[in-house]
Length: 110
Image (cartoon, rainbow, N blue to C red):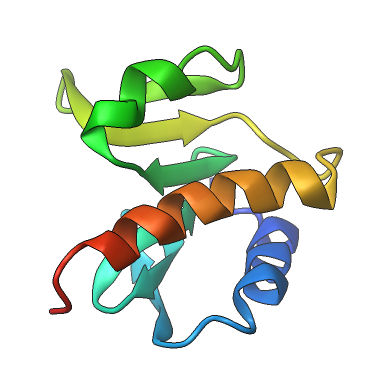
């Protein structure tokens, strides 16, 4: 399955005012890089792939739409899959995007 183009367009709109944002195909989806770090992606599996502060992972998992991202059978600390679709409000989507962008900005630029 290809990534959700509508979701990617919504991410693009939310990130339009952010400096240093670059779109890049990644993991079969469309990633949005901030200062060289992946912040959020329209995932090929649907929803979002989100990079967050590893310390915040467990706190963010309280949301029923959030799950740990699993790669090759291993749960990745600081990476979440967010089950979000076109029915999500702009505020809901923006909240998740802000988590990813905030963490990406906290890292040294690449």
